[in-house]
Image (cartoon, rainbow, N blue to C red):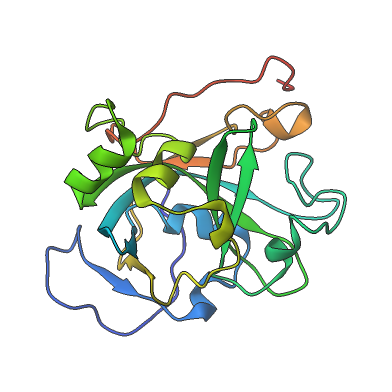
Length: 222
């Protein structure tokens, strides 16, 4: 399985090599979404609220590029009020509402002025499990954050948080010191060319319990 390139950073704190993570500067996230996405696998994103703190370990992501580059991207046809965050500073949150009921969370990537983001598709709750259970109702522990809308609920992140800095309170984001082995394939539920084999920009940790089921859109290209 491939391992993505990783640029140097300050030495990490203690811990097993496979589990070691560190906070990164914004420059780390200012790269193409397709390059950044697999580097976020195994990262821990935490969100604090008056109710408490919940943290998730990211198991599955999807990369989305911008104007004229990616027919599956919200920014494919240009900037709108909703997608303006995608054109902004890296490591900010792009949250959007889908199906009239779900909020999904993305990490903005790339350089300002060029839209790029990484959708958080699946994760495992590693801190604040009891609070995540309260928020997710009857869901099993495996399903607390196994899916993009589920992880937003588990973390307690509302749509109104779009544009927030993921490197500052109430968020924190720590990325693995060494990139993890991953698998890649077409993105889930994306129609047309953007959901086909030409865009294998879904990345996941093989056999990880936080990975959501792959669902091909009925109108996606092969």
